[in-house]
Length: 155
Image (cartoon, rainbow, N blue to C red; front, side, top):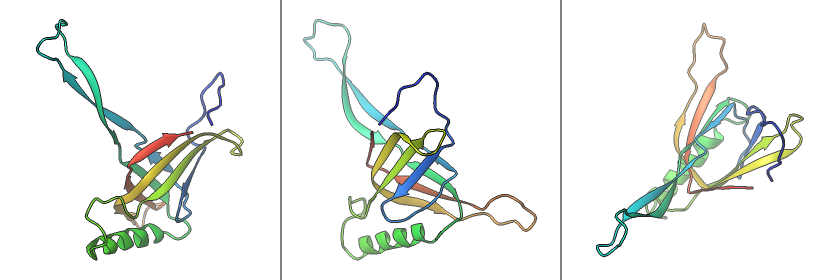
């Protein structure tokens, strides 16, 4: 539920909830969509310009970057299970099976109240990247997961 106010919310107060696991992320990017627009003009149209017809909606892949905390192997286990199911003849490649719901909540400054929610439906991992290790480094180990998303809704 969006809350109206005079100044914008900060981007660093957010929560991510998977339907199958718990994880804390440092960054979420790619919450977007694009609508294909086709131009059409019939031959007997009195206007000398085409009309624009909206077509299919395409949702961008969503990228999650997180510090390695909790059980970092859960995303890998879920992805391997999905690949195994597809390979066993349980559905064609690209089928809408095995997806999960991911909820991204923007929080207020107190980190207690949800002010905006994005629901990512039928999300499936398409890229999982492990952290880079460096014996001299002091950075947090970051792992990246990219999910294809079939629908994004807001509430």
